[in-house]
Image 1 (tube, rainbow, N blue to C red):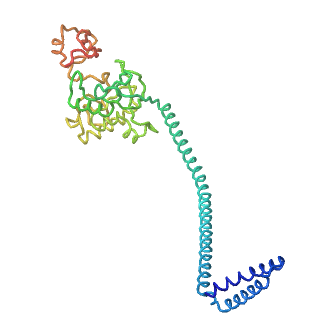
Image 2: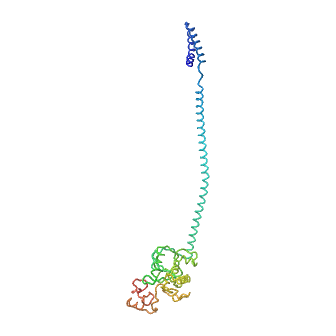
Image 3: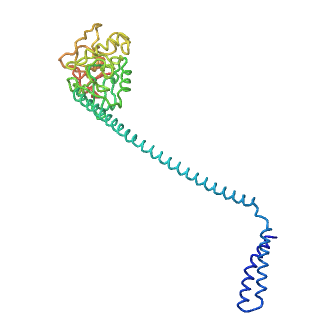
Length: 354
């Protein structure tokens, strides 16, 4: 109540003073009264002010506390934002530093990889050059085998017929000898469709027009090295595994001694065709002897004439194959005096074969 009274009295004092002044200048009789009212209002104001209760300290304290808390919250938030911003800056700096550190590694690794690639290419090129040099030096020709005729004969992909030199497998085509089919199947499994290297000894072809060749699976570094011959040459493989006998016909004698050595090894073990006896199943260098010396070389490496009478230079004539086989049961080759082309129906250079 005293608060309200003090306010009213405080407002009344200037109002009545102004009214008194106005009355004085207008010469009205109310000047004195207005001054008295103003004075009384002033006295009332003083009394009310003295008697009014003091302001609630708790409210002030609470307001001050709230202000302080709000300010602290603001300060804390600002600090948090500053710390977060600082952390972000440090993280960015760290990432940037990591990138700067990792980039040199990339650039350091890249040259190493390039060097390795260059070295590999150089090594590969060196090997290719060395292989090409060996091919030329050893007279090797890379071919693809189209089909196999028998154990020691095949046809290249481009139609050239090839006879393996220095070896003789049992017959398996127009006539059949023991172990001939096995030899033919083995050669087929090893050569047909394969890329191999052919090597000439001295002769280019035989009298049938077939190329005379040694066959390598891989290019040898030394074509006279026994270990390489054992591991890489197909002619030697046939002899070592008992599918062929050594069969030497000069002037192609480069590997004849080794082939005879391999044949003796196979014969001692009874491998392949040697299981049928000490002379095998076809004609070869070890026939008729158990010594290291081969028999004299003969002319025909393909056809078995051991059961036929010796040929003479006198021409022999037979009406048909029935009559011829009475004298020569296994037929005759084209260089035999009894050969007649009319009896050679398949035109393979051998007449009246079984």
